[in-house]
Length: 258
Ligand code: ADP
Ligand code: MG
Image (cartoon, rainbow, N blue to C red; front, side, top):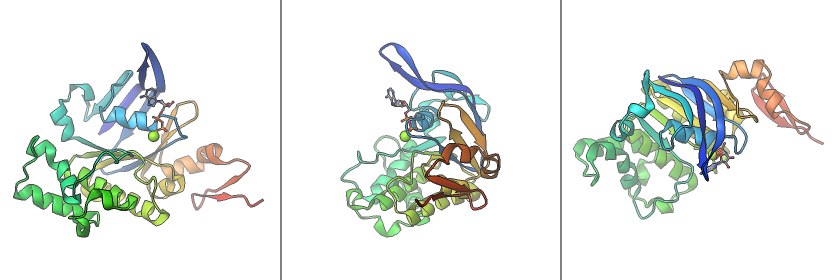
């Protein structure tokens, strides 16, 4: 469904190109959960924002069902791709229901008048991610985990076939990280969504993702399913050091006791 070809990502800084990702080639398929991993500063957020059309690419192609991303209007894109960013701190003084309702904006227009169907969709999304009991709570009064779930409900309410999420498990307690990624996997598998999320919890990604996109230190993108990346030794090569051992079978890491 989404193909990136020879993609170059980055920024224009005082008239010069600052290249972050170069010659990136990969695919996202419908109904699959893909996890994007890589060191801090390797360009995960930049890549997600570029695919979401939040920032321009420097070169190459992003194709959605064979059509160039640049050829979609803003209104088409809002019905195609939703993105959940790490920093949700800009939303204040709104109830959980209102925040999730914002996901309906591509359908309700700027003033956001919800009809009965929109309200039903918002209700269903709250239910689906398990935060319906918080509907009337203020967003500022939630825990990080609850707020993250609400932002995911908002993305689901937008009813886009593609959902991109930048570190949706950051700041969460381990069981909550697993719950969030399992929820996203369920959405991909049961609602046939295309989901790409960046994550630092590599052990969770290796156990739950259908595919892994891994950005290496040199900015190269390696793509494969978790078994391929574990069996080929690529994961071990990047993570293992004097402090860390990797159990291939269990797809998990151990800190070497000194
Ligand atoms: P990650 O999400 O993997 O931690 P980022 O995509 O945030 O990495 O950053 C990749 C690189 O792009 C870093 O070197 C970062 O400093 C740089 N960068 C991020 N945002 C900007 C910006 N607005 N202008 C210039 N460089 C940026
Ligand atoms: Mg980032």
